[in-house]
Amino acid sequence: MNEAGNWCLIESDPGVFTELISGMGCRGVQMAEIWSLDESATEDLKPIYGLIFLFKWQKGMGQQVPVQPVDSSSDHVFFANQVITNACATQAILSILLNRDDIDIGDELRNFKEFTADFPPDMKGLAISNSDLIRSVHNSFARSDPFVNEIVDPNANKDEDVYHFIAYTPINGVIYELDGLSNGPVSLGPCDESNWIKKTNEAIMQRMSRYDNSEFHFSLMALIKDKLESYEEEIEEVDGLLLSLPEDASDDRFRLNDQRSQLEHKRQIEKEKRAGWHRENVLRKHNFIPIIYHLLRSLADKNELEPLVNNAKTKALDRQKKQ
Image (cartoon, rainbow, N blue to C red; front, side, top):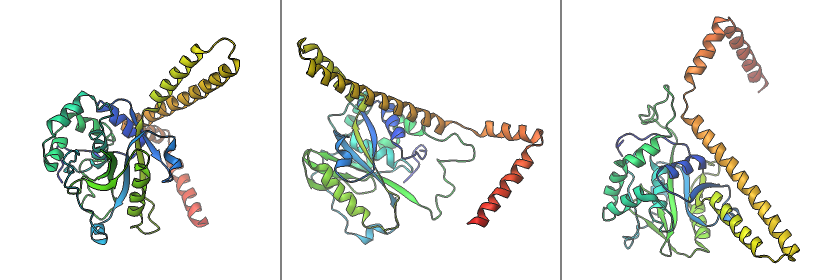
């Protein structure tokens, strides 16, 4: 893989991914973290458009298990090879967005999808690497830190943990595993909207079983309908029902008002969560080095820095002795 214009590492976080999706022009969707593979854990998230699985990449893992055959009849699937270092998260998200006709992906991505429709997977990957929109939105989440270069990683050739993202989504009644490091889309069998998540969870659990019991670096996220929009639609629907009630329908009015209050409470919680996401994303991008430098300089000028450092060293030694 090459740098293809330089792409930074981005954090695996639903707030980051939701803002990234919005920045590429998509509307009406968001990312949500899934904490369990049980069906009950995804019930409140439906409709789910696709799943993104994060796992630790292990050298030689491909030789330990049978390689699943690529679906040769999948010309209708948008599949791109990953040719960009650090971009597997964004590519996994695109693998869902560009394969769902029920998502408003915006004009830019729609034109990109049409332009690359007849490209082979490697050329689709190169097209992603050369997209100014996708690259600029992705790199907008680079940390502003002069001591960290996320694009040129000094440890890139050393033994270290490497993580990878792959996507799962149903397309025309078939579940597909979309991994940019594979030769093509892998069919996991037929499905419908009622069972595709269960079947995908089985495939994910099978993948997880290849690792030692001590391995816990896994993460699963779902691309779902925008919950703010869902709550607003439900509130509008309840308001319509309230207006249609006759004056003497007090029990129904009480029930619907209670339902509306619950929806407003959920909407407020979601708004607060979005505000928290935005704040965290701003902090991720902010460079705190100047303020830290001036704070330390001010403490040093007041002869207060050295006593603080010595006190911290003493506390650290005390903690080590207690361990």
